Every structure is written in structure tokens, then in C-alpha cells.
Image: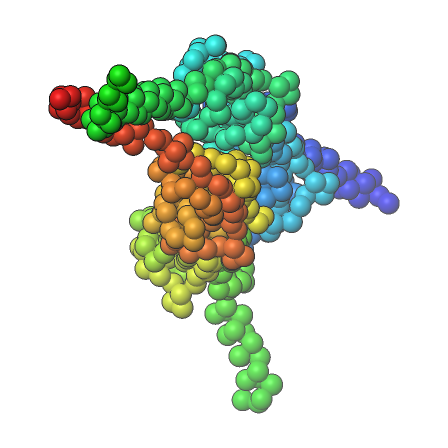
Length: 276
Length: 266
């Protein structure tokens, strides 16, 4: 090969672009953090960032799928929730309970990248507060109260949110109330209005209020409050006894009076003549 | 001119007239609904994410200058009412309980539907209850055949069911409670409060709590629970009024006897 030819080859080689290894797309979730507890029923804001990846609208005219461009799929517990075509925060309103949030980069034709580029975090959502220990106390009736058969029960709940049980999963610091009388389940309440217990048995009754999960199971540790009330027996019996005694006395009085009258009005036999 | 010359001229003409580089004619655009799927049940009263995919269609904002068939935006209809004009593949819908139909269709940038129309539709149901499972109810208080006063209450626990006020369109796993006393409709419940009864006649009674949908129809399969109670009325044995009347009568009788004129002995 002549020197000129070698020079030409060298020039051509210099003008050609140097093949460089394209960086693999990257993805990371900024928030929420793995294991986060999101309280007060707040929406979950999923923030993420991607690198070496261009977001495009999938399905454009003449689009050629490539490893460095496409879109992202957001899944909650495996269910597709969003198709994302830009890096922006995603607001998710989730049911109470534990959830897995997954975001995955996809090529513009919907196929997974090779190797797949995805990130996941586990979060727990609750309608209750995110921090604090639940507690309950009975405001009314006070201990040892002597009362009638129907009793209002007022309670104060802290660090716990009452929600209607409707088949939703359990979540920290949310659930409802359960009332028990002498240890036996009586009723459940999901409102902050006082409970009303009717037709309680005469004598001492122990009222217990327990915080329970959405599925009715006790919290761990168990959170309860109790009070003891005395249900006064109906006053009807003693009153009736008194009236019955008075009536009986009157019957006796009447009998005596009648007897005396009858004795007083009965014709008497003439007195016998004294013997001479 | 020979046939070979004619062919050469035709080839040359074709080469000259044809655009260069050759332009691939865009395929007809399509749209498909990814979510929700047809006949899906969306539970928990959640927001509904409508997700669609388009092909050969460039999504642009309404009103922009388009180039033709393959550019525009997506109209989202909910129950035949236009809800949104979408330029991204996800639209969030706040929907009430019941059955809904979503239709998405491609429209040109000037708002006219494509010709032929390109659309996709799905019918699904939204419920405030859980999306799956079988609802149940159990009476938890009082025990069967227990003695109660004329004023009493019956407590219950539901599973897999959301209690909501009646009147809404029927939806899976949500509704309210019908209270039946001795087989007759006594009342309704929409909260987790006990069923309250007052002035029940003395004797045995049957209380049934039944789950019904928003149109007051029993669920399929039916879900109900029954308890029998023996009402014992303390007031039924209250003899106070009768005793009071007897006392008054006796007093009068005593007075009459005492006032009766005593015969004087002659």
C-alpha cells in the first residue's frame, strides 16, 4: 500500500466518530421513602428522576423505539395507575393499608428495556395519625355510678381515627370502637357520638371500650378502658309491695268494721227472766 | 419508439416525480383503553385512572395548527358527557358509585373527530365497598332466645360491605340495612349503630337484619342474620294502678261501714 493510501485511510479513521458505550438509563424514586407511613389519609406524592432517558409520547407517527427514550409506567400493587411522559410528581390517592409503588421505564412501543429499569417502594397509608400511640378513655359514666337501665357512654379517643368498617385493609392508628358488657361483645361504633346502651341488667355491670382494627381485631398492644356502673333495680316492686300491704291492712280494717257493725245490729235474744 | 424506450421513459418519470427521500405513508391512527378494563369493579370509592394508548398519532394541545389525520388530542367522555380533552395518556376521574361508561376518541387539532372515527370504550362499576369478596352480616348482640325488655337494641357486624345512604345507583358490596321485625319492614340503617326498638309487645319476636343495595333490593346471594328475643315487660306486671284503685275502694268501704248508723238497743 502506498504512503498516500495509508494517509487516506488514517484521515478517514480520524473523521469517523469514536464509538462510545451509551450509558444505560437510570431511575430513582425520590419520595416517598421505602417503608414510609403516610398519615391522615393524605395523598401519596411519588417523585422520581431518570437519567440517560428521554421521555416521549408513545405512539407518535413514525416513532422508532430505542433504549434511550420512551415513557414510564406507574403501578400500585401491580395495577397500572399512570403512564408518565415527563418527569413530574405523581399524586396518588390510595386506600388505607400497605402498598407497593413501582415505576418502570418503557420503550416507546411499550416494551420493557433490556435490562428492565424499575424502582419500587413500600408505603403504608392510614386515615389515622402517622405517629403516636392510640389511647381511649371513658368520659361518662363515671366509675361506680348508680343509674337506670339505659346508659350513654361517652369516650375520648386519641392518636386514633374512627372510620367505618367496610372491608378495607387494616392500617395503623385507624379503626373503630367496640363496646363490651361484663366481657361480652355488645356493639361496635365508628362515630364520636356517645354510645347508648339500653336495658342493662340490674346490679353491677362492667362497661369496656376497646379500639379495634378495621376487621374487628384488637390492636397490638390491646387498647381498652373500663368502668363499673350499678344499675338500680326497678322501683316498681317495692312500690307495689307497699300498696299491697296498705290494701291488706284496709281489708283487715274493713273486716273488723263490718264484723263490729254486724255484731252491733244483730237482734239480741231477750234477757232471761231471773229465777225467782 | 420501441417498447423498451417507453419503459425507460416511464421509469425515469417515476423517479423524477416520486418524492425523495421516499416518505412512508402514516398508518391509520388507533386508540386503545388500557384501564379501566371492560366490566372491571373499582373498589374503595377510589379515583378512576383512565389510561389509553395511541398509535400513529401525535398528541398536541387543542387549537394548535395540525398537519392532518395523525395529529390532535383525545376527548374523554364519561356516560356520554365530555369530561376532558387529554394530551397525555392518563386522565383521573372522580366518579360516584354505580356503572359508568368511558369513551375515548381521537380528534384533530381543530376539534373535529377523525373520519372514520377512532375510539375505544369500556364499561365498569365503581363502589365504595371492596372490589371483591362476598358481603356478610352477623348479629352479635343479644344472644338467640335471650330475655329483653320492651326497649332493646340489636347489634351487628358486617364484612366486605360499605354502609351508605340509600338512593345511590346499586353498586357491588355497598348499600344499607333493612330491619325486619317479625317479618315486617321495621326500619333502615346506614351506619354501624345498633338497631333500636322501643315498646315491643311482650312475647317472642324475630329480628332480621338484611343487607340491601342502593335500590333496596336484597343482594345476590342474600346476606342476612336473624335473632329471636323474648320480651318480658316489667310494666306488664305492674299492679300499682290496680292496687291504688283497690285501696281507694277499701277506704270508701271502711268509711261507709263506719258511717253506717248503729241501731240503738231498745
